[in-house]
Image (tube, rainbow, N blue to C red; front, side, top):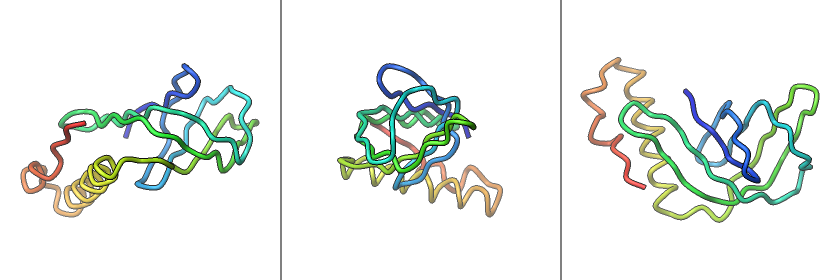
Length: 110
């Protein structure tokens, strides 16, 4: 999986994400747990990228490893539904190895 989170005008590689939050690497800003950040998330999918803006609350920062994790807040219901569709489509594709069986569920329009 590849993608980016953009915080304060800087892009950071997406390490992991779910419907509830994210973690990013190569982090260099000065945020602390509890900070609220405005951000844009881009997850590169096979069909087309999923891109959305939201707010997140920082839950941990590892300055030695340069990683940051946060929980999404103020996330539009349409975006939540698209995230869930993406997660289920990817899980189904991984279980049966067939992209064709999940293609219609994985189409995203943001």
